[in-house]
Length: 540
Image (cartoon, rainbow, N blue to C red; front, side, top):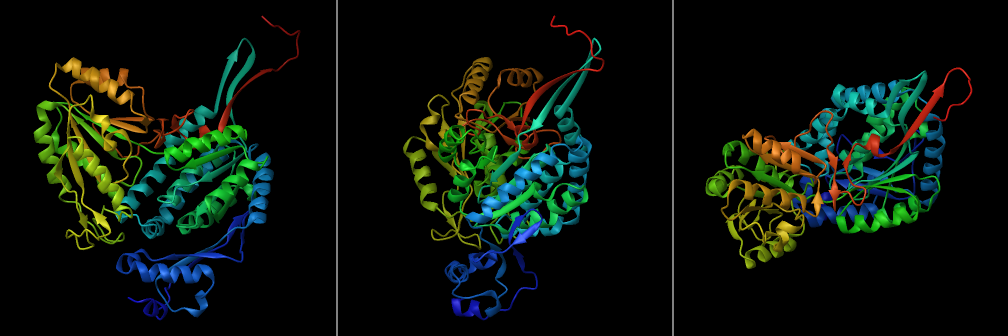
């Protein structure tokens, strides 16, 4: 379709318009960013991007257009709007932190869960507008619901307040909210990350969210239609929630320079995140980092390989452009050949397509050059391509100019030197899965080598293990210290009630990295002692 044809199409019946969300009000500005329907981007990316540029620049306007390819627009915040949002958040935080935990945690999260049910279909649709395949969008929505389950709420509440009777004194260990939390979500998953960050509100904080200019619509829908109505229903101050669309650098600078900001939750690459962590510390802000993952899966010799393979192809979901998927596999040499064959069969069932189609799990990949450079590095250093390695067109045929990449499996012989490969040492963010086959050795020697390998990973998001021998499971559980989440004999990416879904050690979470419960990471411990009747003080 040409640009002229796009200009003469028909307006969509569902068009979203949002301004900056500040203290319960939508504030429109002079500039807008527009969201283009993703199907059109795959059909004719040049024409679609040309239309978007003309709209964003103001050369043409929505009332002058007849097109069903523009699904929404969001106002771009200026500096004054940013300052007003921070002031509103700071004022609201002082009041909101005094609300009972039963309101902030139980009422808020229970009603939020109801909203996920009410708007489930539309939330899923908006995630596909961000380019997420429908099945992955439904998985993300399941994670949102998990945050709100009774088990998750119970754990959160227990951590926020513990009280003891000690010789007539009330001793309380509680977590107090930090104050104003600012959230910088990633461009590849902005709405899901914003909803994750909303858990910091349950701790008593006020939240300011940046909606990325490249994909602002989901964030603004979640703020306006899902979170804000729940906060209004429970009587929260209006400034507890704010959202602004803009480029990252101006907003991050404003947050770092503002005395009103306490915490900044930052999603991004490890390189940029480590630099931002230093800036936060210098500015006396708490950095909460959600950076890259380079997750390891260990497959022991007694594993059920059909089940393992189904978990391992999660490495290719979203074409590998998710931080919490398997990034490398260590397989016991006794079963390596069988696992590789099973894995190739499982990966062969994955298909490309439009994100709103069912059974599609592969997403477009913009920078194929980096994928091929990484693959060439691996092969040059001794890896063998077992499957994949080519570009794909929208119809699934091999095409070097296609938007997609084949799920690619490589075999790496030897554990000791495997990190010489870029594909093993660092997160790749492509549909590329290295299967590492250690040299044959006694089981205990091999197990110790695996433990050392996992614990020495520069990253530490998730690790998962497949083994039926309870002694092997117990040994791994006792010795693995790296990572924010460990999974045994289960889906690598599945969400679990009361378990963290994000956060980790090393280059995943920075110097202060650990499993990330936003409601806890945005708080600080405080001890309290109360004596009901005044008496002579006792210091020992």
